Figure (spheres, rainbow, N blue to C red):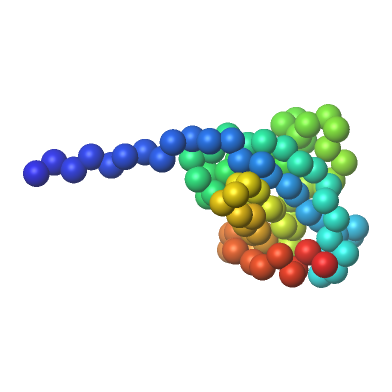
Length: 102
């Protein structure tokens, strides 16, 4: 029997980047940028955001934040399906609770 793997349909994700005023702080997160990212799931979306905001030539002209670094938070807002928060850790993106943004 041959099995076909269905690809996840790509969709636009509403993405918000949160950073602290200075690198390595744990409090005082502020929204620094909001954009739409076309991806095939959260992992694909997070990878695209990381690549876009870590190469100065690919960053949008109106982006006022710094390069994405350990501790930065990304929120993916899927409307009625919920909001999902991820913090960049040394070993990749980890799911977190909203409480970390305080």
